[in-house]
Length: 258
Image 1 (cartoon, rainbow, N blue to C red):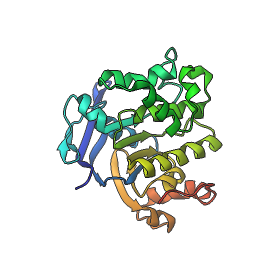
Image 2 (cartoon, one colour):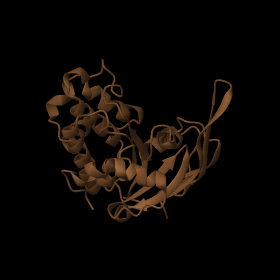
Image 3 (cartoon, rainbow, N blue to C red):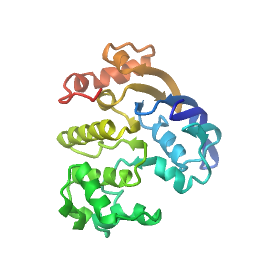
Image 4 (cartoon, rainbow, N blue to C red):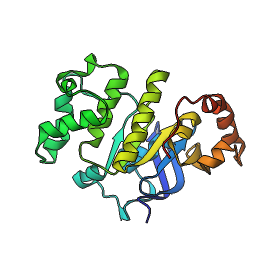
């Protein structure tokens, strides 16, 4: 059984007196411990799919299942122990007046979980930050360190699924590689399943086993990593994305976890 199943998902927004079809009849399935990528230009609907899974975007049609069960509305606490999301901007995703300790401990308090100190220290260690960072504020950290904290926060409840919404696009190139390698390591060590969004095929190639190409809210084609490496695209749109990213894919400084 697939861990994530999306069947004919549609998301329609009402904006300026008209319906905006952000996602139309998208279907996909993701196995446990797989890393699956959604790629496309801005406005292709890829981030909207992640938000629909989390209940942050209105589902106008279709079905979303986690571990064979339809996701509830509202999502609730049980959902958050299964699925967590890491957002694009580490500057905006952390409360500026909360210490890192408070940020990481908050999910534990909401769910009534004890052993706070050791869990916070372990989470920081897992993402490569020293325990002393727990008493710092976000403005005292670099962008890469903030994103590591955001990843640590997402892991506090030990979910099996991480939704990754352009998690490195706001970071410098050298820091991007570090964070991507961290995510690959955590997936291997913790048995995580990733659904990752990017506009950049080079990032998706580094991270994902399979890829769905989206355009104007619709799925264009699905590729395996081997298809991508061999440039086996069947549509002009997917080919254009590949050509735009080909140099960065060839120059990738790191090897993806297999």
